[in-house]
Image (tube, rainbow, N blue to C red):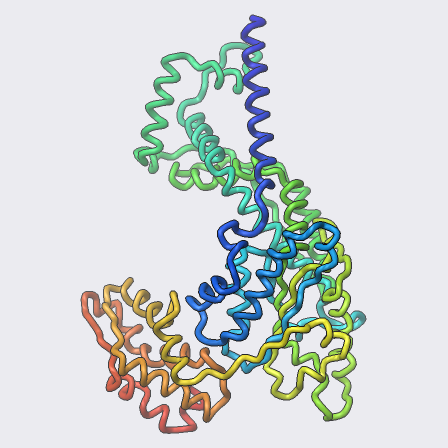
Length: 485
């Protein structure tokens, strides 16, 4: 009897030790993807070229900024704390790739990234969002990203545990006494029971049991929508967290097919294996050291040249002054802990049609030492945008219609004509850059997209004549193109 207890204790200790080690191993690797964290600026630019056409100067600037983060981490700790990120100000018309460059950079670096509109924030005391919400959103993104990475690392263990839960539902274990211990029974199954479980496990992995229904206890995520007035979003989040904690730990019985139950069980078991406190600690550190904040429409909170002061200038200048502490370095309280913003990279962008970068307050100008001007897109750029990127627009439309059985191809003269039309409309109307291509292509393929289910198995080639037939009249009539294209 004592040997049995000793065996059970040793198995329990080894299991708990292995789980503890697996939880701590979540935090061993650094936040950035090891394959991309050591990329040179040239390699970063080449990777960005796969998705974004042109704007070489902007790509160089963000590539150097990303590489400098790696360089900083190689320095001694005393000097490392003194090296501050060189924030970037992108200047250029809408639709030329400012936001896409920042988004692709964050994806490439596998870093916490948040994009905000400067116009959504107001000075403290006015109705609107507080600028510190930017850092809270960045912390949320970081924790979510790190939690998902942690779950990926323990996925194999979670899958095994999910299989055991399914097998327990299919083959309930027999109680052998009043003090029945499920864990002890799992460690000491009978030979017949073991053979049956092995057989069912093999069938489960082969998908032979996918349609069989089982009854499981699934954890219930309590959620409640709470409406809060503008500027009080943080209080709303705290109230939601409080009510969700009140309902935590509850479960309900559900009857599901094994195919539907497996992903739910894997997610639940992965959540149990992940140490949430360690994830939050590491995520906050990653947020501080690798976070990227993209502030769009920064020109909208600048004074409009020499037009004179007006009522809106008070709030606009107040937003700039509220942004200053974040950009130069401060401590922001979040629900995960305090975040230091000293080493967060800030990238701001704006068209600066009515205002100039010099219209920003001097203190904020000095916090964005790197300025990059993005050029307007030409017809040649539109041709490249339609064909060259990994997920080019033409490839997207061809893949979409292929799902209906329609084989769509674009002739080169059609691509040239589409680029020419987009450039012409941008010149005559508002220049919205590459976004004009979306409008032109949607109008071009309107009839084909509507009739696609009835044209299964057909092949359609779009040439210049087809483009002119669908869009020629709209392009020639300025009034029609203004409202339709």
